[in-house]
Amino acid sequence: MSKTKKTTTLNRRDLLGTLGATVGGMMVLNHAVAQENNPAEHVADSASEIRLTEMRTHLVQHKVYVELMTNMGVTGWGEVSALVPTAAEVLARKMFDLLKGENPTRIEFLWQKLFRAHRDMRGGPFMSHTIAGIDMALWDLTGKLWGVPVYRLLGGPCRDKVKVYPTSKSHKVPPHGVYGHAINPDEVERMVNAIKRTRDQVGPDGTVMFDAHCAVPPAALIQLAAAVKAYDVLFMEEVAVPGNIEVFKRLKAAIDIPLATGERDHTIWEFIPYLHEAAIDVLQPDVAHCGGITQMKKIAVLAEAYHVPLAPHCTTSPLGATASLSVGASIPFLLIHETAPGALKWGEQFMNRPWSVDDTTAYATLPDGPGLGVTFDVEKMQAIAADPNYEWKWPEIKLEDGSIADY
Ligand SMILES: [Mg+2]
Image 1 (tube, rainbow, N blue to C red):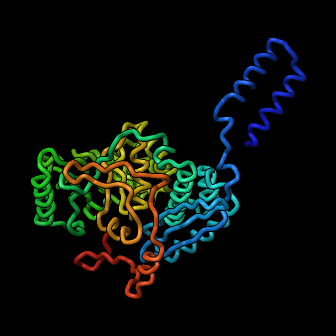
Image 2: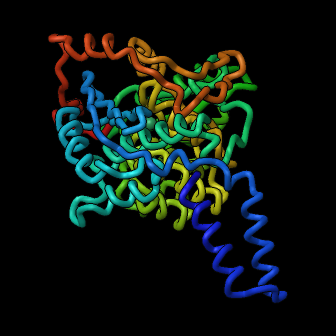
Image 3: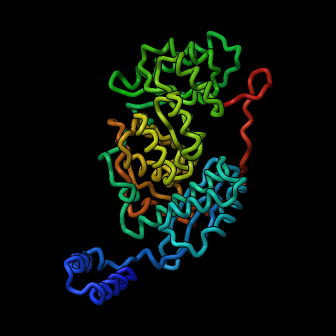
């Protein structure tokens, strides 16, 4: 019997003693009796006594996987992505100081506890990506505890399947290089031709997107956008490095193709200016960057209020991708969802992927649970982690003249 039920019984007895058979008393009594007849009252709250006991971290090449353990044997897994992995592992382990002994089903409370733990460290990629991994693990654990896929905990599915790319019918064109401000006509032509080729490949009923990857300067982008109008590009992605909303406003005013961004932005606070300033048509939070499932769902709510759909950025292994698809399944305004075939294949060496893609229709199935539905082959994972030939290196992207390039 749960503690809640005991309290209800005590209240009922108290009420009988103090209120007697007055009309008001009978009404309250009837309410108490109704509560007692409520089937939900008789369900033991299996979440109430569960506590986090340990965090295991698994550093596998460029990734860190966090594994949360509990006193009830239920575990949860999360993916920490796109950081210096050795630093991310140390940070995740130190963050567990704040989680030990806590109830893992209090996901919002724990997100707040981590994010607001240190006034000078909140926000930014290191905190946000690491919290994202832990947040995924909490949702995974809670879904397993209740025996449902995570999207069921997020309000249930808004759709039966999720449109994804890349497939034979949906493809995003990369910028094919990095470009300085003195871009030449042949370089613009290279991008135009790539977009044209892709439109020919997917056909008139297919989807073409372009990712500028912050590697194309504003003037060249404006020129490019005008030249590819005929190929019906769904959106131009990452038209500028985040930081100055005025740049996005300027591009939005000059480009006649929908603009998308968001993969480098963290938490609801970094997404607000795009919406508030009407500077973006599509938002692209990455579940592993923005602060996890908890933040991505909130970003989707903000975007919904501005009639802006999400096209989630997603370059994670099956675990992170499943977390992202779970949010994608549960929100009303979803345009299309990214998958990264290379990252999925890499992860599938040591974990399953609980959803599949129909290449001819460009739709993914909803992920099977419970939780995120991803299980790990720890031995295989450890073998890959032990590969002596792998070394994490900083990207070094330069222009022809030797200067540093955005990418
Ligand atoms: Mg991108």
